[in-house]
Length: 324
Image 1 (cartoon, rainbow, N blue to C red):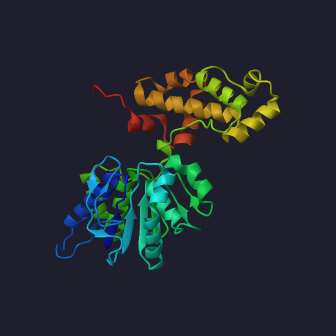
Image 2 (cartoon, rainbow, N blue to C red):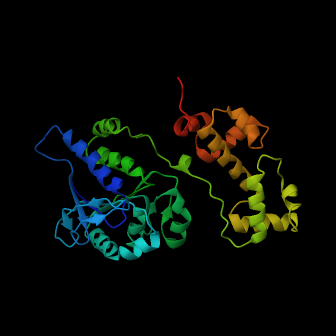
Image 3 (cartoon, rainbow, N blue to C red):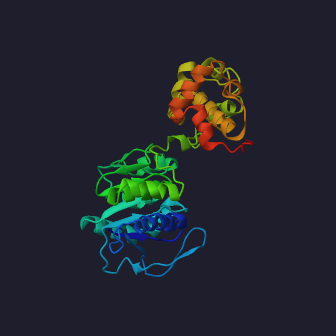
């Protein structure tokens, strides 16, 4: 399997080198040492070195203009403005489109999937990307069935992986697919990668949309975020505005995508997540702190939104060091 990794200005260096590391360890586990599982090369548009977003220089083996054949080409993500990167990457996008037409498999992780989307190779297919790009991706590429909750989406000739460190899961997926499950398990243990990740829902951060232009709704949003611990109802929120109940619900839904009470839930869940990450408070205490009295009800709501129980969430994301 000849794999080309395209490196470009402001790409994430770890997503380039890390992919090579895992695939190389898989190569070292081949019983037949004379036959390499993955032959890996780095490419750039000019064949010259490029600077990753950290300034680290990535040295390629080939230019994309070379006549090298690849069974698969991998597009890592980047840390830069998406629109600027797309504009600067037009030659890469054109190259990817040509490769796809010739039968080369294309894979990408994080916002590297934007370059695949720009090449048109995801049209009519399902894909994933970093959760923070959901709105941008859906508005710019309506012909793609975005599944932002998934870590990996395999459409056969195109494989997409979710945000940043999902390249680790993508690498293990390739090792399992083209090598063996046993080999992938070995790599998982060597690199301490949670190979069981299937969704990125637990990693989502609720970011309240305030660029909608409705100043009355922004005031209510801001008030909710500062007073989420208080008993909140639509009537209480209505009393803080000059709108009727019906108008408030309608305008709030248009502006934020949520009803007022759904928004309150999201704010409370996000704050509960922060408490679980940064304190040793019990979930009962956290439930009261964020404005709920019914612990069982809030626990069900928490799991519905994060796909994890509070205990599972704390175990996965806690920043508090244990003394045990």
